Image (cartoon, rainbow, N blue to C red):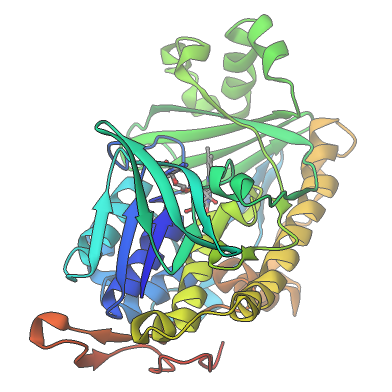
Length: 425
Ligand SMILES: Cc1cc2nc3c(=O)[nH]c(=O)nc-3n(C[C@H](O)[C@H](O)[C@H](O)COP(=O)(O)OP(=O)(O)OC[C@H]3O[C@@H](n4cnc5c(N)ncnc54)[C@H](O)[C@@H]3O)c2cc1C
């Protein structure tokens, strides 16, 4: 039995690794030539660090230059508001690690390449599904040499929020709207600048400043659909509020040349009502696009991948058919975390971001230390760090180099290759 996955983002790459490690033949297609993406999700939360640990990859990932965030905070005109303290979580992963997504993906796909069943096709764009006998039996893709087919027992759409395969399967996400878009850009980090990542909020303005070791990755929020108005108003319409919000950037704001230097994220929250068809499954952003609030898009994508491998690796390896009811189980398992996280994101978007951007609320009036309000403190730390229903690696490693299908060692809480899920935190 085999699996083909469209999309080498966090969801697709992690699923490919987990399946290949379990002895499944898996092909991963990525339409770009490399994993380099500027201004993508770089937040690796404790839930993902835990998964990496279970796979023996945490040390390798944490050797990359990165910053750790223990206490997410919001900076207002009159002081700081501590949102939560991840230090209250059990160690060692009681922080958010900021790691470039391309480095993360390189490590995950390199780890997958150690298994003989793994095949990575770069510059390969999936454009259609192969359907036979009422089920999906693989996909069609194009690369420099032309158009090709890959047949597989399971086809996974991990091709992101604009998923082509989702559309080819006739699945349409339900949209929930968002009051803002985000303008991303970068400026140099200099000695004497703040060390931590933080959220800056003032009447009418909001931005996130992410310390990326040698530079600041900056996200300036604008009202939904407002980018054309911003561009029409000229580069100073962005430079001035940024310099006012973050005065330490005043000495280098001129380095922001204009709107060619920025990237716009159209914020959406959506999710599919149905994530599957016979022989076909959507995971990650293809199943549910997340708001940047809490920075959990990557982590949900990874959790989907872990749950999918836990549920399906055994059948895929043994050749047992995968009925659509099994794919439905996966959706049922991952729907609750998706719904709860999106609901929380919508509350923050509507009560904080939209009202701050519309000047309807003065952030300076927020209590100084939200993490001092028990049991809110424990709850928010847990929610930030692990989300709802964190997944653990329950698939076994099968080392075919040492003999077909021979298990060499196991990791993970559950240690089993069955639909029995491991105990969750
Ligand atoms: C600007 C920006 C900032 C973000 N910031 C954060 C953050 O700070 N923290 C966070 O957790 N999340 C953040 N996110 C969201 C996060 O990046 C996504 O939720 C997460 O990457 C989803 O993973 P995925 O694997 O499902 O999809 P994606 O990461 O979108 O990966 C999909 C992959 O599929 C490839 N692909 C697409 N179509 C095809 C095709 N037809 N054939 C083959 N390959 C294809 C794409 O090139 C891509 O590599 C941000 C997103 C954006 C756009």
